[in-house]
Length: 210
Image (cartoon, rainbow, N blue to C red; front, side, top):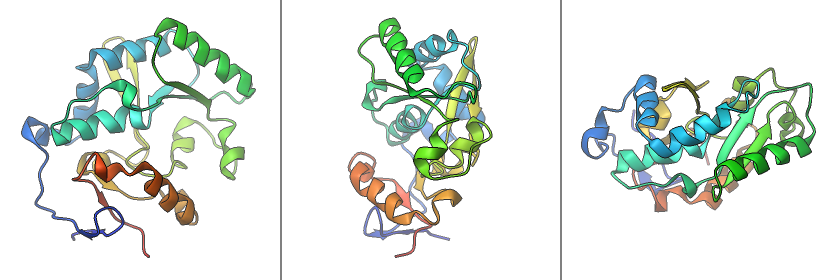
């Protein structure tokens, strides 16, 4: 079925549109991991976060989504195009000041990058949700399925955390997570603010009735 793209394009998606160049072969979670492994800047940031040994810790959201969408469009990219969203889960210490201290340490290790650190064990309060069980559970409550993707490095290997899989990410499909089914006003406002199609014209929105 061709999804309705009225929210992003004002037209229906062309399901025959293909990503540009050899990146049309990026189809699986393993392909996403291999892509990240080939990006020295991303691997450097992952290594810096890894040295902190934070529990259930990943870098996600735009850190993964943006370079993947750039690659699928054949665009150059920079890690500084988005916040570097470090997420971890530690219910034993949810003081926001700790996150600030971690951000400061990362900024000292790799200066000039837009570090953002959030302990997901406290984010349910801000989001109006029941307590989360772990980082994956927190990611299930992020706004879009294509954004709920994160990575971490284990040596030269990259592990992937994607509670909803990577089909929407690689298909450039923007849709709300089930947790946002009753938060569509917030979801739509976020999409309007982000204006992603101006940068990535092949994106397609689906799953939101108007």
